[in-house]
Image (cartoon, rainbow, N blue to C red):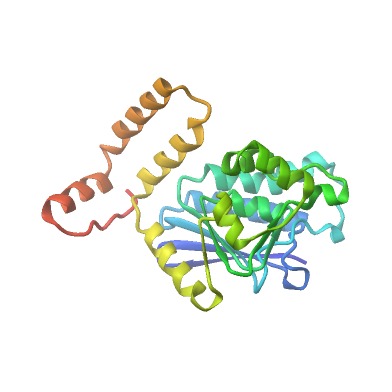
Amino acid sequence: MTDIEVTRDDDYATVTISNPDRKNAISAEASEEMAEELRALEHDAGVRAVVVQGDGDAFCSGIDLSGGMDGKSVIEELETGLNAIAVALLRMEKPTIAVVRGVAVGAGASLATACDFVYARDDAVFGWGFTDIGLAPDTGATYVLPRLVGVRRALDLLVTARRVDAEEAVDMGIATETFDTEEFEDMVAERIATLASRPTLAVGETKRLVQRATHRSMEEALRAEARAQDRIFETEDFAEGVGAFFEGREPEFEGR
């Protein structure tokens, strides 16, 4: 049975997939719960970054089919569960951070790469093994992966189902950084603190601009940037950032 645990620490929240006996395979029920928790965190003004991790030495080994499909069709199961998680992560107007220890495979790899920042321990392994069991990819893999690594590399990973270690994942753009096991927790804590301290509204606008840029012409992208700047100019964080710049100090953003 998969549990979804949500904890809060200062100005960020951590969502933990907990099913360590099955390398944190995520059940249909748990995927729906996780999607609901992520949507709630999106609207929680006290949360300025969201961390996703697995319990123990694995991130997530994919969907847990041992509990069956609850009488739902495949489409229904995905739309209310794993796909809803991917949508929540991709659309969240706060930094989302995957902390990957050990395996992130199948839907687990898709969930990790749906996050904005992916920090991989040196034993991390990523793999989209859908074709190994005769399935096509899901959980946004065919949307996210080509944008990270390009079409040819995405096809290689999705069709051959080969696995990628932490170092190659960084080289390919699947992961942001990798750290040795001994320093991993401290380095990730530093990264999370930095990301949670950034101006939340400006981060949200930046995410939206980058995600939509591939569908826009240069002129459309420039207009979108101008509209985003116009909205940001009215925020308290912008006033704080400018004030700190002229006063020669570090800004203290509040996410407003």
